[in-house]
Amino acid sequence: MNSPWIVQISLVSLAVGLLALALTWVLRRYALARSIIDIPNARSSHSVPTPRGGGVAIVVAFLAALIWLHGTGAIGADATWGLFGAGALTAVLGFLDDHGHIAARWRLLGHFAAAGWALFWLGGLAPLSVFGTELHMGWWGHGLALFYLVWLLNLYNFMDGIDGIASVEAITTCLGACALYALTGAGALIPAPLILAAAVAGFLFWNFPPARIFMGDAGSGFLGIALGVLSLQAAWVSSDLFCAWLVLLGVFIVDATVTLLRRLLRGDKVYEAHRSHAYQYASRRYGRHLPVTLAVLLINLCWLWPVAYLIGTGRLDGGVGVLLAWAPLLLLALRYQAGKAECGS
Image (tube, rainbow, N blue to C red; front, top):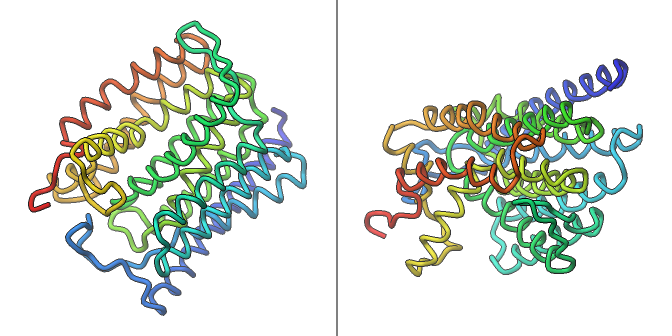
């Protein structure tokens, strides 16, 4: 990485963060004027009516920077159009759902279309090496990648339930990946996650506990699929980097997956709103959102970053590293009753 490149991407990231900051302010005023307010109910984790839809600022700031950086040659066509098309379609669906309601089946169809678009540009799922075995899964792998993207998109929506948590997860994941790229000679992959982290940071100013605006489905769904696409892009450079992404996203993946499986086994309607994730039980136990959001930050920095570093630099097998990183997260999820039936439900 040369000095002019570092200066350029740093200035772009600063501009993206400031743009997202300003756009979130505009969206907050718009939401208040149009009464686009999240009113607390029995399934909510908040108690104060709060404007929603601020995640659109992340979408606009990131996609604008993405196109500009593609024009300068900093980001290739495959990553640009894969991210832009999948992210824009997901965000539009979320925006429409935030302003009204779209039936679950149509949302899901749109999510699969967005994931399929991204995989077309990425070339599907790269061969993976885990537990010392090279896996060339062909079309089965592409199908697995399709469901992976759709699941990550939706779990990010599920996990965006308390102030700041989805923003903190995205920022720490992206910056962790950027650090690994710099350390492993994959610097060409840095611009996209770096500007995404900057866009989310601008929004986080307004979303940090106590939040003055919520992200909404447009923002959370967009982040889910964008992070998924970035992780699959990394897989084409190194299987270890993909496993490192799975580690960095571990808090969200483990909590959401454990919760979903327990609700499925109980026969719950998994598409209905609920507040039975571990992080939601934790926020009610402590009476505030801030301790839980800060706990996620500390887990990511102090536990998941080091494990991701060991994997990304080849010091630890990817499969072993993912299991190692996720094991305590699974215990935490169960400790905080992820997926347990809510009282009165």
